[in-house]
Length: 60
Image 1: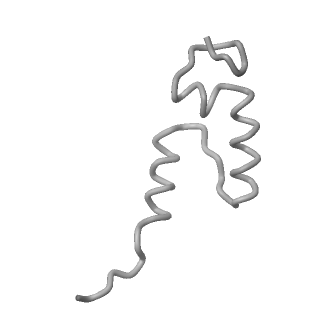
Image 2 (image 1 turned 45 degrees about the vertical axis):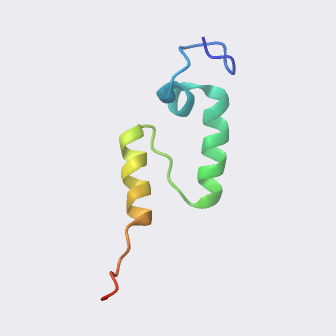
């Protein structure tokens, strides 16, 4: 049982997407940073990978 919202099993997916307590925090932080907040873990990972992928690779 999730100790933050008292509903659902405490898991990664629950804490990021289903828990009303953490979702309010996640949504607020995402909005301030200009990050759209998808509710699917794989979509978030893809978005974060795009942020860290260099657009130009230097020649060595």
